[in-house]
Image (tube, rainbow over all chains, first blue to last red):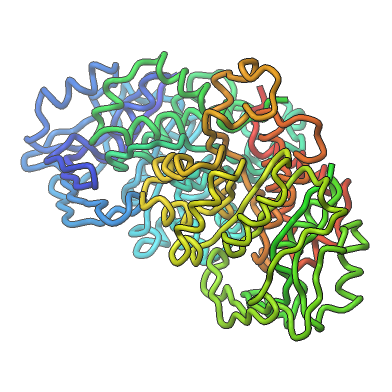
Length: 320
Length: 320
């Protein structure tokens, strides 16, 4: 099963307590796709400038990622300059250059039309909605957003949320979107905005999923069979405690990549599969932050992923 | 098996976003003992003033807690006035009156000498050390501390740490004690100060245990039998997401009470038991914060505790 991922393919200059890198390959679609590529086929829709060369493209195609939906325009790619010098959990933006992204109008290649998963990376909700409309029959839609869209493009964002099976945002974004301080109250308020389920990411403390009544009802021949008590209970997946966090950039998109990639590899999305997918999300997020940019995600193997999955299970499960 | 708990028995005036209460029964030994009393026998060593009446004492003895070690002195009991108005995770101290606590010199009643668990609540490390010395043969010693002792009584605290089987502190205290920012590095540095294991509490995100080599070696006829890989791997226990947190006071002591109480009820402390005990700690912490002071802990039943334990397991375990 193939995932279509739309988002940014960008260059990032990053400063952290562990050092700095100039113009790493980055962007939400890049991190997502690399992480998901270990589980299933991934296709990117994005726009880049002339600075995105064969070298960068090969780093994606080497992982089997379909790059035919990456449009090339004259000019430069999206560029972000950020630092995490005070707190590894908080990105401080030093510069953002939209460049070719400013006029991005996503075009879905004909060969991508049979994708059955859709990941809407953190971009303008108007673009997210337009892509969603072009792919009405996908099996699952997972979306991300951020403070900027929540604050300044709220109405457009609220139109996208009911189109999502799963929204993935962090603690602060959940509070901002809902206006509620208590995370559980905030999560219920966000669910009421339309997504069938919500994953709230807690950084180094993992992530919690909250489910609406319809979370596992879609596409089911006998919807009643899955309506057990467990299905709509929250689920908390841990993150792996790491002694060195080199660069937190892309952790959330890598989480989404592991989560969607695993689910897309299965014939059916069940509550058990959703939980396992969140563990794979945590695994991919933990790899992403171990080196600058996408270096670590590009170097790992599927065996290492499964080893870390087992660690995450051992970290969090009772032994009885 | 009986636990001896030393700490404060106090009155707290508390302001939170949910309201305020004047002079609730509080203190580390109070919360700890109430939580532990659902699992095993508990004995308190503390000092109170004339404001601690038969009414307060009955609230402890009703739960089977042995109060013969609570010394009564002329004057008033320890008093704390705090608020959580900005952030439910951060206590803001408005007033502290040591009162009779200022000259507290713990005396262990003869009938308490056969206790086999010791909880050293958050008090002067000199007092913690003196109580520990008076009970050299206990099976397990669990200790707590706080920023004030870490900052201003560091040398005395460092003498207590090697006497502990388990130290329970929160994220901020772990960073402060170690001088390290990364929580895993900080935890390893604290373990190097002597406690055999360390539980770092993350508030609403649960708690992580870190183990030294000797964590499960003590009192074992054949220490080699337990040295599996799992024994020294960290363990992360979740907290229950709560939609209403009325009063966070005592959550950490209630966690310690559930943790110690469960372990003290068992013949042997194994890695599996340690993990289960952390879940019971999370359960008792979650009850403690649902009402002001100790109201909720005094009202629950063992059946409710086990129900919540099952919820915490369902919240965090894979379904495969």
